[in-house]
Image 1 (cartoon, rainbow, N blue to C red):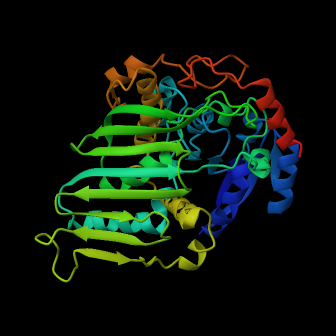
Image 2: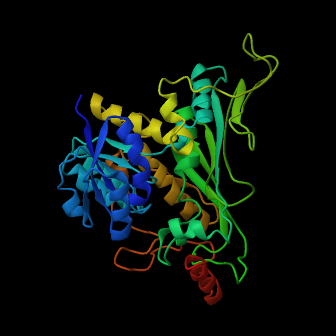
Length: 415
């Protein structure tokens, strides 16, 4: 079987994925990044005379089967569309589109192409989340009514290494990212486990006041977390967050049905708690079942060496299999699901700014919904041309970091 030819756009994250692509029968043939120093580092690490580019339009002309879009968080859509125009397959990190209009454009462009698109959302493939889905699919929980997902990722204000790698200049997207936007790690796993799709959303944001000597260039103030509630197409409800900064670091998920519930336990590693009522427990089960699930996967050797709890390898394997078998990925990794997740992120922020007002999540299978949003380009991020955000990134409208906060931020970057 001929190896697939893969190009990487955005080598910071992209180079971390290269090994898992190679383990899945792929060759990395081209790299693209605007940062020449990082491009050279990645080329040296990956070796074998890989072609390098600083211009995407030149890069996309290189012969390749698929592109990993690992560029800035909210800027994937225009590059995915350029891939679609050439029938190149797309593996897209994080949210698929930064604006509602881009979601419409993505769907329309994809319908004209032969490209396979996959959202590179890896958290559903973590061991505990695979087990939660297995339990949901088994039917013992009854009708699924409620699920919650938390992606909690606080960062020490003194962590210079984090800022140097992930937040390395004042205009970086992380300094403008509303608390609802980084949503796929909390929403993706519960969509996958339950099969449900959000159709209405509302949200509230919890904020703090940052000390004046806090090292930051953020324009989102002290918006530490958002609590997002969705009503879904099957009548169920999700409660999730974006990238939250409360409590201790961790990723936790729970699904509840009419007959029982399953969750991974905070601070308990890979432990699963599966619970039933005394009158609804299946034969051979206890009311409370605490255990650590096995992988039960023939590629466990590779999974254990992969990033994000094995999720990187497994998600990449799904994508490669879709290409080889000639079909789009399943819910929620397909393009419509990806655009729905982005819509939840975008509209949840608007809900929070509107005091928790409820917004309908559009279904872009419907042309009327597309027309409604085809010119909606509101964005909390600066434009690629340096234009100011067109909607406030923060609940504290017009928040700007103080001179002292910026000084401390630069001190960390230069330490």
